[in-house]
Image (cartoon, rainbow, N blue to C red; front, side, top):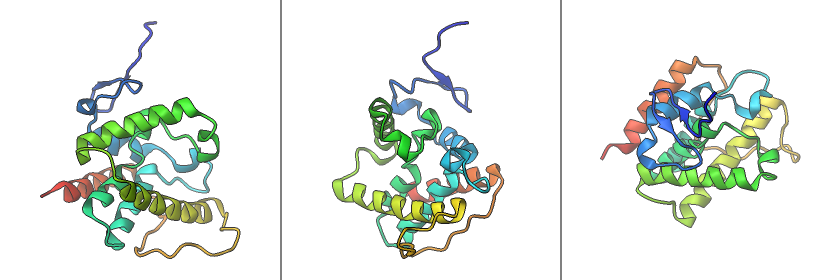
Length: 182
């Protein structure tokens, strides 16, 4: 068997995750893969995709009146997982090489769709929304409420309804198109 150093994506692109090229990133591949990846490495009470999580984050950014660029960054913040898979936070912190690959891949995604890296303030806004949404994900998908029992205040409404992957994929693509239109 040949030793491949690429993955073949949903659209048939040979993509090299360890040497990401922004030209090889396809939003259709990202939307498709993330709609099929389960949050929490599958250790949740019902299927909930990384794509749904990203949609929640992007809609929350809009509800908080952040820029469209920040909302787009929220939609894309887990795009590297379309090529590398999801690794839970507690484990990821012990994998510096994985985190470096993930950062490089996300930089390629941001280069292609945002024109470059996020500012420190944009990074802070995206991280805050991701962390706030994680608190809800843990509470509703794992029955793990915050230690103090208080969930962050959210500006948007969202649900943990199990949606067909094709629905999530289409919603992801629709929101992407909305956020990237001039």
